[in-house]
Length: 112
Length: 115
Image (tube, rainbow over all chains, first blue to last red; front, side):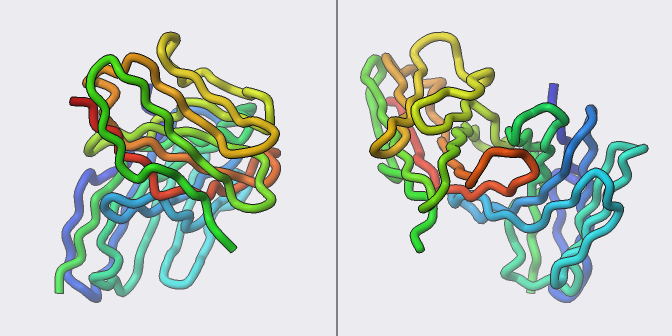
């Protein structure tokens, strides 16, 4: 079964707006990570939040984690056209040995 | 400081042929992970290797697929007798220690097309 499910599947916004993506998972985790993938390229790590953390910031990125609801959100503020990409959450499962389980992704399009 | 290097970038094979995908991890990284991505889908874990050892191959198909990470040289993902369903992007990632809680560094992937 899919460990991570992102919502929405696709999101289209105007430059300067904020973009919020959500991720739900099913089992206990050590940490949750967000990655970005530009079309036809490999994934780039954005941010990692540990299971005992609730919120983390990195530049224009803000990640929250609610372990009681088994969910996380990624907020990109003041979006730019260059933020257009697919965004994936990945969970490091308890006892998983650093093997990450990826969700299905959110395709973000930022229009000028 | 080279990142994770994968080659070839694109690989075309006919049904029944063998495909060999290579991955050189980042300098200083001894843990390698292989993932497969079908169009419009997320990455699916295949196998996790440390130098000369397979740590977790729970995502590998039971037949035709094998992986190795020798003491010297790159990690190799080998697919024998390829079928059209093997067409996908194959990504390799590496990490320094494999102790958990680490981020992964990904290569640009190999796009395998089976005719």
